[in-house]
Length: 289
DNA sequence: ACCCAGGCGGGCG
DNA sequence: CGCCCGCATGGG
Image (cartoon, rainbow, N blue to C red; front, side, top):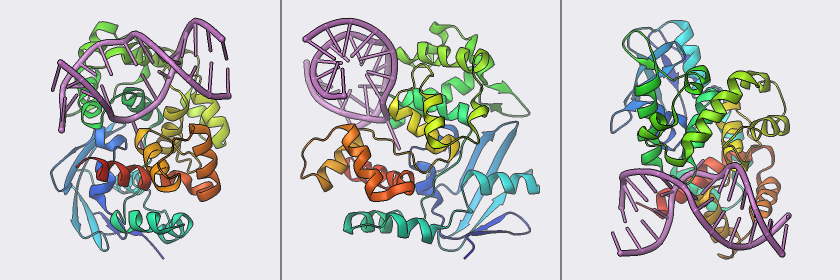
């Protein structure tokens, strides 16, 4: 079973719900511009600016490209949206009960995305004690102020750029108490540590490395491992995931983060990161309209 | 006016 | 290890 193929203009897709993928509080939610239906999407990716339109349905769709439609851009899209993932396999691994079955049916075709580690780090430092709408505003404000000027767009600012930012200017972007974390993380990732060095490491090593960064704790490290390094063993537990797990599996009784990690490990094994995105998004969508 | 948000660092017992 | 606190800011 193939879940994508190249076509003359762009990329054909199958089992790909672009709207839930874009909207589900992954880094592209914060970085990309998109219309209400998530048909037209554009975002900076390295030195490039991807400008795409989605046609068709989640069962049988295609991605068209404005401007640069080279093979490199198509490959970037396949990689970014993880279009090589075997969805049937992933679903069979996480479809462990009636609740998961319903979440999968409701958000069928929602993908994990694979994002730049530094961008992911900044996005999720900002995410702490914050809400999705405001995270997006803050990230975009940082791109507007610090993004490196390219041909008609600004790319996400590097750690070299952000390490020289003034705290008060970062706070003017709405970062609040997280401004200090962003600056310290930028200094550390420029002078003392290379995020790229974690590329081929195991989940445990990736997480151990990430947690050394200022402003990165257990939860944010799992987000970066999942969305920045593609580690499906990562299971970020935020307030929504915690509440949902307690409600569905523990009769509404509180459980420690540690206990919930053990639970997810046992229930979903090496695919818990994929399961997490469905638990998070289902919980958040039904928790608040 | 009030509570909450994809938590973290630091201090305490 | 667990618990508690402060933290900036705006959405609902």
